[in-house]
Image (cartoon, rainbow, N blue to C red; front, side):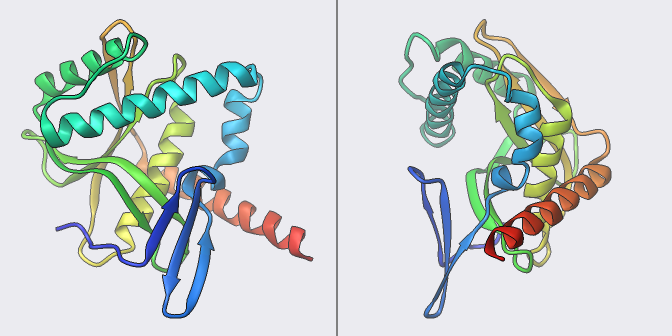
Length: 208
């Protein structure tokens, strides 16, 4: 059973997570903000207009996928149809039991937040699996693994939650997909912790 998260609000326009604890409101850094330095290394040379268009398309694909998980159907647009077909193809191949889509939560002690794309079970594997869906043309395994590690640590901070495996699901515009398993989740967790420490150091330096 996944934890029921209360007191956490997400504001998409500013990408802010606010945690309300009694009379105190805390703005929490997100997983994507914490690993921003690595993301910049992977995507920093790409034209900002191209990145914006890709991000907008990715958001619409994620919204359609959420509808498919909930209702079994979603409207498609010309530039998203192939990605959605790729997702359906993955579903037919793996027949996942989808426990949560766009699960939003926070780490109980480290106080960062994030939204995991999918938490599933697969019929031939035991335990919970977290999946991050990508629509980018280039797949960066290190970046995705560290992102998945951040979500994994966040989930595992709650009682009785253990993530067995993590995967990146790359959807392609031609209707095909690649399903990449994180080979060393423990190492990816260590890398995320380094990013977390560096992020905190940078924030403290700004406040000094």
